[in-house]
Length: 117
Length: 124
Image 1 (spheres, rainbow over the protein chains, first blue to last red):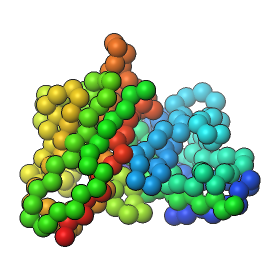
Image 2: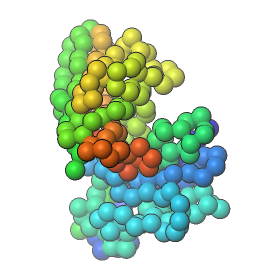
Image 3: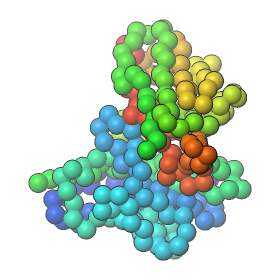
Image 4: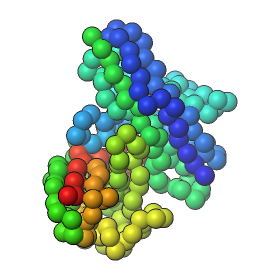
């Protein structure tokens, strides 16, 4: 069965420091991987995705993520955090076509990022 | 860009009453609508998938008679929580994929899986 794990409930960083939000996945075949951000009382906003190609993908608001097949990870990163980056971040995986979960997004439990001035 | 409008943002109701949540796609046709439920500090759990004009497909463990989903048009899907109880209190989010101007949105790669802003339901 496909699954996504975000091992940290919360990540605290100081403004200007680099940040990493961790995500590992389990899926048969080649995964489609996503990161979404959720601000309070708002819906999810797409940040970036990995489908194929370069392992380092760049997304919105200066975020990037690195796909590591051997470690089955897709950690979200940003070189310099901003206070406005404080939000809830979700990693998600979609099983490729042909699997039993085709078309469904499976979300991790979310990681709260707190950036302090 | 395409937008999904979800209403109400929050609702408080008495136990035993029914609550309807609406999701409308603005400037695109939502051929598929997904309904999620989110508990505090937990992930989004897919409840059901609905395609316009057909019955919703519910995930295992989700009571279809409890959570009625209607997707009668390409721009509107509703989730009705029937006979709500305190354990139904949660954050409900819809998301949609579809087409606009002949272009298919979010069909293959889901980055254009547009999300509503969510509805916080509190059942007293």
